[in-house]
Length: 564
Image: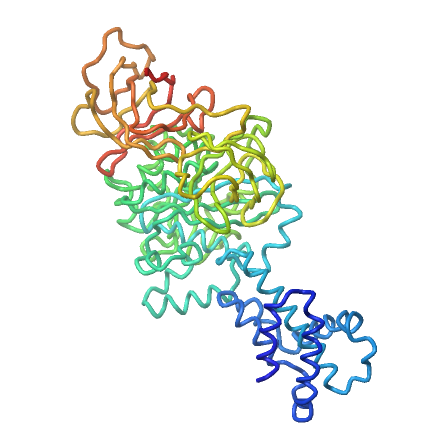
């Protein structure tokens, strides 16, 4: 037990104290050495380190055979021999042990440091290789949307497994745990649904984040919740995305409920469009279900019902929408084409994503980074997607609307530390000069030369999508604009807009009702950051929600200065 007891003590010491520890260890081990002859391979100590340090990812380290674990041990020993113990070469046993103690401590120190840097859910060995080429690949943010239980998280988990972001051992562990809860088909979704509540109920609540790489591109998965209670979270996820994947279930009855009036398939497609997603891939999931059995008729039926609706929302069926069948649980047609589905001739899902055209983004524009989330971790950390401009380490930025000047201490792009980042990347930034309590989701990081606009009153063009009664001035709703959520009041109706011709009415309307388009003046409860749709589309589109339903979508036409 003594060698184990002394090793942890040496972790607390500074590097320069290690020589004295050597001396202590030497004397301790010399007295032990007579009995400890069989202990020379030191296998126990090495196995003990990874299981103690890396609880969640012991798979990665444990899978190496103990014999191999010994080899690196010997190689790390050589530098110690050269540095500290050159005269002491007779190797009576005590000497070799003395060297070995600190080497174990050193390796342990490295592993503890590594695991502290790692995020809890990313497997440790997968991150370092992506560092050199991370900035070169084009970043694309993909949001998975659709009705509850359509299979969004399962497809996300399956993609991570197929691209090697989750290893087999982790999935086997999830599968065992899911079986114990009689939920064996849920295990893939656990790669993205990480908290206990989500796993127990099988429902995503927060927007899950993960990433994977193909040959040409680097993708961030945003796994949005499908349940109607969590639509606000879904809007936050969709506002960061470049590309939406609408997952629908082909299973008899499930597609219909998702697509009817109260279903989330319709609402999510519409919200994705208002959040600025231009390209939509529709994954017809659960094709392996006994009620479907890869039937072309069922696939076409789903397609026929969806296309007219998606067209109405504003997607162009020829250019913006791409349908494909798949099975999230078995992984068919996600990475490899499947034999079950001979009638589908297109590329599988991951290959299709890789073949998409490049997005045009201006890296020389003004810096705009809407904040999605914030937390404390050795300083203030914020999450968000850089909409335009580029930022670098140690840069001074301004947090709007409070005009706090902050400094960037470090940038993490998908958990890989970088010195600079371009538009379209999902970032984690550590800030100096601001407390976590002073930040709210919806605040925006800008460069000091070009601040974004902030205010409370603005004129907007609004399309009323679904509302039972009429809407008059004085109506209150919840405004979702980029990542910001704020209470808003419709203070005045300015004019109606003819849907077909775009002509504006001469007189002021007294009310608007469903399916009408109007220009109205809106006033928010607090100051928010926004831009006109013409200047900056990502920050000029919004949705209005009330009573858990999306009532209207709109775009900001003009910002109105406050009258004092």
